[in-house]
Image 1 (tube, rainbow, N blue to C red):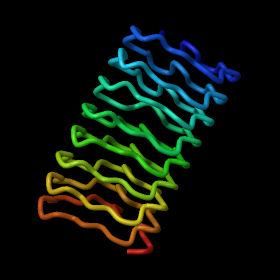
Image 2 (cartoon, rainbow, N blue to C red):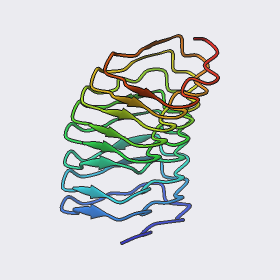
Image 3 (cartoon, rainbow, N blue to C red):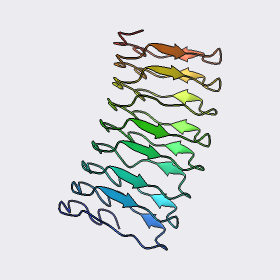
Length: 193
């Protein structure tokens, strides 16, 4: 149920049995001692902000049948994550302020990356935007200070407002001919460009 373990501030380990299909929103909200979790492949849906503010969460194994990722904002110890093949959407603020996130694998099944998905991921060094994504939305990579280069696939038509603003280490960006609109402040404070 919603908020099932929310604010269980001493919770360190969780073993979720195979057979569980849905984990509701905020299920582990502010479980700030939780360091690692492996979610069984029987899970097909994770509610929004499932692991919000789990500040010590370092390692996550996501189930293979989910279609959307939207649950890790303010997980400031999360260093890397692999999005399973089959995921179609990275939701709004999914990795918002995950300041230790250095690498993320995004499969080419992802077609939508929502607003603020990687906002202030200050340690993110590299990301490959999958072929098929059509819009880079508002603030998607805002403040990703360690990001050095980005190649935008030729399926992208629009780059939203402040999408790369504050990416102070960004030295190279490849924008294809398919892009017909670039929003305000998109590359503001990209002082290495």
